[in-house]
Length: 263
Image (tube, rainbow, N blue to C red):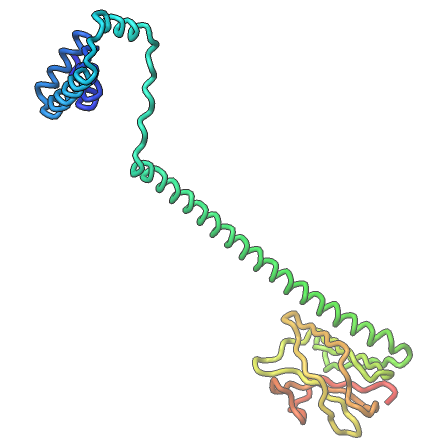
């Protein structure tokens, strides 16, 4: 025989008071009734209510009432027990962890998106910087070509070189029409740290300071579209190594020198 739990025993108390329990169910209920003062008190209250109702109506129930009630109970289809309502505190315990998990997932996704956005922005900035560098290089090359092509018959080429076939060399293209020049160096090692190369233009034996520059690690340098000192008359050009900011007078020795054709 199965002993009913206190909850099920309280649920069956009205049926017990009304005499609607079967024999086995009644014995199990009475066993629980003997062990539970609370259940006994509930049964007493239900009986008192029933007595009060009967006295107030003063109507005797039909003799076959119990039989008809039992017959109706046996004929009625069994009712599916409804799911017990979840207490608000329990619902909160279920809902809050789920909500926290969803919020945490949303935060993680947002952080990941922010990182991806930052990485894409950095990549975009690098692309823009590279594009700006290429545009500057193209602009310099265009200026160099314009300096050379616009000169036409007014273009003078000055070769600056020391002795030796593998020695460094410089080609100075002078556009006399607009008094601008393009300098191309080759096999010229980069200047020492804190130093720079400087171009000098010789007029009547006097060196006139001009553009400073340096070469790439591969020994090449291309300086385009720079303006020469006014006067448009030079006998020679020379290059020396000077402090990084340049000099007003050349520092000896002179590394490369070359005459200006037609001077």
